[in-house]
Image (cartoon, rainbow, N blue to C red; front, top):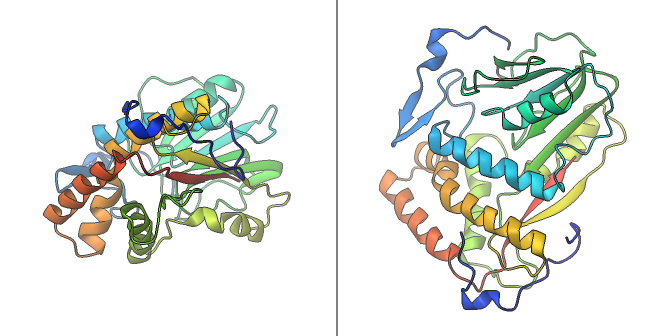
Length: 304
């Protein structure tokens, strides 16, 4: 598997299209009153603080994403050199897939998963509990409370002043702007325009979606030491001749096909002035681009 600074090897047979597989609070009843927009469901607690839907389709995307991260990290849940943490926190845990896996792997660790949406399963390990919480609000946890804090695809929000001495914070982020190493993406191409729209969407929302470009600096500025930044690449499609990257690319292609609408819908309609019909048309056009074998596109992924 290629390292983050190496070009992804290309499968010369890919171009024929032969591979097309594609603030702490107790849960109140008001939290379950989700907001519906353009046929998708969003969280009601702290409405608008997060851009993504939380419906069944979004949950399926999260499962695909979790599998992609496992492939990326060689079946590891984390890279931080933790041993026997007493307390751990997963911020923005979503449906809790990673959180449950972590709690099962560390049964002696008191684990907390927080999210804006109450979409976590009732069945969970005994050392794990979920809380509905906005990580951007004041925390109720005391200083030096956690030994390990995990953040993934939160696109911002650094947890500070709540790690015990010697503890670790680990954040994994994906750059939404596709790239290519062989020049198959050129200025003005749909993938190139997609990246530009991601930048504009973040600006219109007030939170950068390109957080991985400077997150390591923010983590260091928050007072953390020995900050490590590891780069990976997610190929969009099975165009690599590296077997593991080819398998990863298949999953990322499904990730894009199934997730694209939910990623852009609220951004484009609520913050950028697009119509729902315009988003559907753009989404359909991007789906056609994803079928174009000439592009050897990938996304940067960083683990801090």
